[in-house]
Amino acid sequence: MRLIDKVLVIWCAVSVAFWVFYALVSGKLVPFIIYYPLWLGVVGTLIWRHRVAVRARLTRWRAPDAVKFLLLAFGAVLSEEVIATLANHVPEGFSPGLFALRIGQFWALNVFTFFGFSVGWLILTRVLDFTDREVFYLGGLFGLYAEKVIFALPASPAFFLFDFCPTMFTYGLIITPALLSRSNRPAGRRLHAALKYPLTYLVIFACSIPAVLLLVALRERFPAMFPPVSMVPL
Image (cartoon, rainbow, N blue to C red; front, side, top):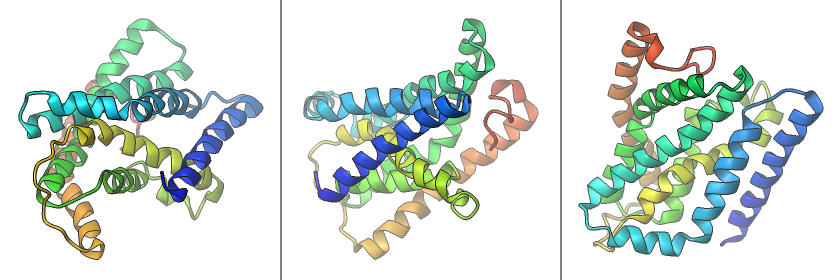
């Protein structure tokens, strides 16, 4: 692990601790205090510690590479959304029936919102040469845009300071299982970072547009299929 990676991991832990402290002091049950400890603290730690064994199992899985990649990418999204649903539902007052309904709603929403992210990375990692580290951090930086964290910087620098790192790690972790499934096939085309990185986001955005447009139309016509706008604005 490089020095910058260690610094970011430490700052991520500090940021999660800050949100827990903030909730205790303010008395506000913010979703962050449930979501980040479970998704990053538990799931992220387990995957990191067992990454070698996980990679070995996934690469031995006899399925087409593209199928494995997409199943794992969307599987990670659905798994993450169970935790996200719990974090957003608890402030409502926990109810098993409503919780189950919310899981279905969050799944429906995020199959669309993560479509471009998942399919885009499938295309990119098959065409261009990426290291695991590049995918993790480029995916994480995309999360700052997708979750609108970057837009909070001018109005609320403190929020950005304590949320940018957990958000980056959240998105990096979502793509990690798919990333670990890549077989040792010939690397894709090598491009300079100045070309490769902008192209990465162009591909993800291009893949996202049809799914997001369809989501907007469906959410307007069938709002009960998705979480309330007050809970998850698009």
